Length: 163
Image (cartoon, helix red, strand yellow):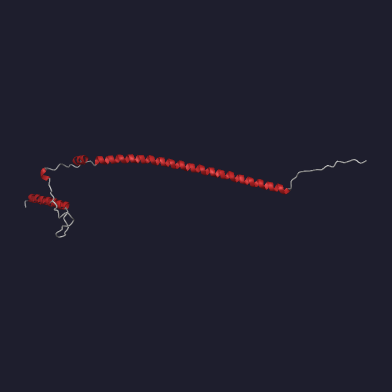
């Protein structure tokens, strides 16, 4: 008798070793890329934190400098007001009397100087007639004052010595 036998087929899905090697290599490359991306994100985060910290440091320095500028301007205004107070003529006169012992001159000690009026031709630096330099009026008045004081000093010395 003939009996039919069942034929068993053992079918196993085992991939070839090359496919496993390719998949393992691809997985390692993906892990490497993923690790690189994580590292890059970390470095960018550190740079961002550094940038913001530098901005805040510079902002604080700017605020401190603005406060210092306001203080310096206030001090400058105070010093200018003090200078104006000390340089007023009334203050100078008071200091001259109190600290330096100065007194008002008497009528005899005052010397009035008069300047000769300038003519219409003598308005320039040179006279038109002989082209010589015109004497300065202030220097001429100062010279006259010195001469007058010198004559008074000679007369005082002569009176004291009996000459």
